[in-house]
Amino acid sequence: MLTRPTPAIGDWLADLAARPVQSTLTIEQETTTTADLDRAASRVASALLAAGLRPGDRVAVLGQASVGFLQLWFGIARAGLIEVPLNPAAGPYLLRYYLQQSGACAIFCDAAYAPAVREAAAELPEVRRIIVIDGSGEDSLAAYATHRLDPLPEVDPTGTAVLLYTSGTTGAPKGALLSHRANVNLARYNVRLMDYTSADTLYAVFPLYHSNARFCSVMSAMEAGADLLLHRRFTASGFWDITRAHDITAFNYQGAMMSILFKQPERADDRDNPVRVGFGAPCPVEIFEPFEERFGVALTEIYGSTETSLVCDMPPARRRIGTCGTETELYQLRIVDAEDNEVPAGTPGEIVARPKNPGWMFDGYHANAAATAEAWRNLWFHTGDRGQVDPDGYLTFLDRMKDTIRRRGENISSWEIERIVAEHPAVGQVGAYGVRSELSEEDVMIAVVAAPGAEVRPEEIIAHCTQGLTRFAIPRYIRMMDALPLTPSQRIEKYKLRADGVTADTWDREAADV
Image (cartoon, helix red, strand yellow):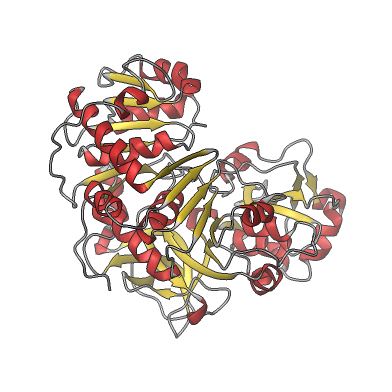
């Protein structure tokens, strides 16, 4: 267990800046060091307070990953303000929802998003200031980052540092309140779990409004004294060449990323790369060991969320492929039924968790007491995920509770369908979901993207499914697509697919009499 005191983020950054070994942080073509970031963050903090903001005020940030984004992130934290990082892809309705729900009183945004921000904030009197990150003049980040250095307040490590919105794939996004010490604790634990050192260079492709990039890449690299390369987009075809060019030793993965990488055409130099470890979830069980062997990488799987950080982990020393590992030293884990009674090993139920010590978990949902109480009922955090544990305590994730498909009295795991379909060599990506049935409940539908350079017919997919799925789980509908709608963390936005329903180009197994 980590026992040293956990400082507020600004104090943590100052401690890192005083070290003899500095991290170099590169975002696209921009570079900064820990010491440079510390200096800029202090001036940004001074400017924010001089502009009339007060500790506890919420400041929204809407921009692409950049060194300026880092300066804002750590400057807001150092001033004792609460950062609200937002998805730049948010449409007008969602952007207005974020600003109104968060109660942000100031907004930093890239110039490209300024018109949309001004429109969304036009009727929100609490928004007092809009600052263009890459603009000029006094309302620009350049002015804030060169402001005079004023005395700064002492910041309580237990206070809220960031309001992170959940993905909203199953409902309205909720703002998770995370403290300074929760952020620092996660970075410190992740460094220890992955054995990161100053000799490492971490690679990230996830956005800075997402917990993975923030705490398990940026802050983890800084904590370890390692270097970091962060790109705004994931490229499967160029991924390994990037690792070679920049001497990358570790990367994070999420969503469909591992399947997409593994489906790339094999190359003679696949194993000739400097990467030693990968961190994330999920890597499909059928490619886990083949992936490690092909690319010479040791993988560590985890289970967690924005709210909980890392509940379970499975490093190579405690490996049971197909599971998320066992509970970490940070959390207690249980599987419960609909009445919150713990179920026996091997029985599916909802995954619930609670921290063993303070300072590891979110402090509730902003301005949403009902959702907080519902999530924390009976003193356990309810993840909304379905899983089971074996007699040794290894957790197997089965599905999102709301992604379970109900067909003619049977509960069907969309995750299982996706795993089986993805085994077909011509399938690149797949999402499984339920659509309304004319009989009752739901029918099974999948959206499929072919692997690069491959073609696959619905009949071939069905034939493949019969080898691995029970009959009631075999999809009725197949929609071939050029691309699936994905979140920046590479998770499928199934609510969009469900909203589309059975489209005109959907193949129907019953109509085809297959």
